[in-house]
Image 1: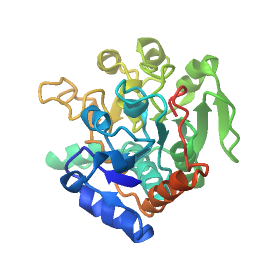
Image 2: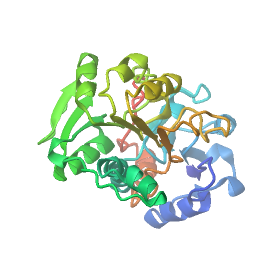
Image 3: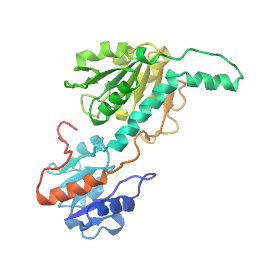
Image 4: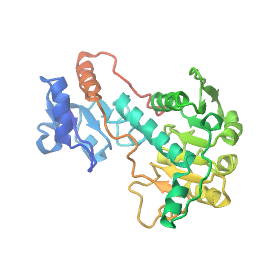
Length: 311
């Protein structure tokens, strides 16, 4: 059995760098990269960011696809992936912490009136404006999985009022947790900032449509570091024009890279970052190596995805 490392992307870690890190954890493992793939019949596991359907067709004995990250919707929905192939994801703390920091950075940017002060500096204008008061500021975290719970706890510990939402009931100390679709409109109306960190599933695609956007608190901020298809982007621009919400910060969008002609780039109430909220994997290669070992030993896998549910 062999493990193929094929990220399917550029501008991040190379296949060779990842292979070396996994090999450090499992020295005796047969680990390959696309430039030295060897006999494809021997490959039983792939570690990827994006799944290449053509490659899948070349691997008749593939048993496991390991996502080098959290979001797996493009893998589990890929018609080229045979039904018997299992899917696992990573749950490292490093990118979860970084994504929480990304939310915090843009919340504080608005919280402390930084865009206004920067604009005032360009005009040599000295205009003191009261910043928001943290204990009076409500932040909603939509999605209370590994990353969302990390974000909620960080914001809670800084003194924000944190309210969380998930499909099923969650309990996190010091956080007002709500669940179910019926709870969404009322919760959105309470939040000064809404942090979206939901997976992409049939239930969440387009969740933030015109109706839910209209339920948001006027002037509030919507931040999305979950999946790009959570938001109806056309509806978002119309909602922003109406001031509900007042601003959006998007680290993920429906089409990535975002085409230069997209109106999202030029909307005055949208801030875009190029899917960089969570970057480093920390010690996550331990889990990749461990899943390869477990696959060979016929042991339960770490962080296996229910392909029917999509997470």
